[in-house]
Amino acid sequence: MAATKVKEGLTYKGKPLLRSGNKIFYGNPEDKYIVYIQIQETTKIIDLEIGTEIVVQLQTNKAPGHEKVIKSAEREGLYEALDLGEFWLTEALEENA
Image 1: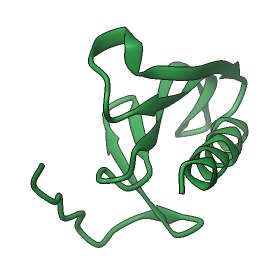
Image 2: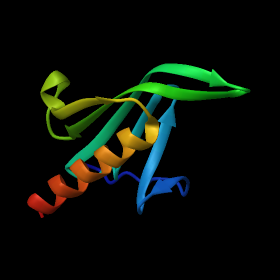
Image 3: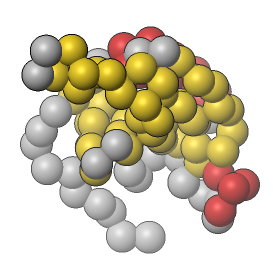
Image 4: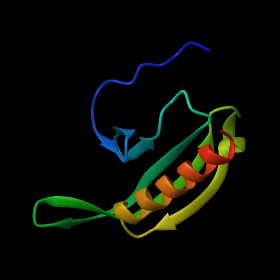
């Protein structure tokens, strides 16, 4: 598999964050695991859309389709989802190091 170069950009705790619409991918694409976050519902506060219903999943890069999902949970805010995803990702990468 060819190495994927991630552009310099937004990071969280040293790992890249990539956003496409209501989807956020967290982690290095060449690692065995990544975190997938999907914003299901938002609420508008003044002029800012805030994610209120978030699905967070720990996924493997090595399996196809639905078999990719290792863990899944729902959270009420983006920070809670990202914090949980970062914990799962760190734990999974340490176990397989």
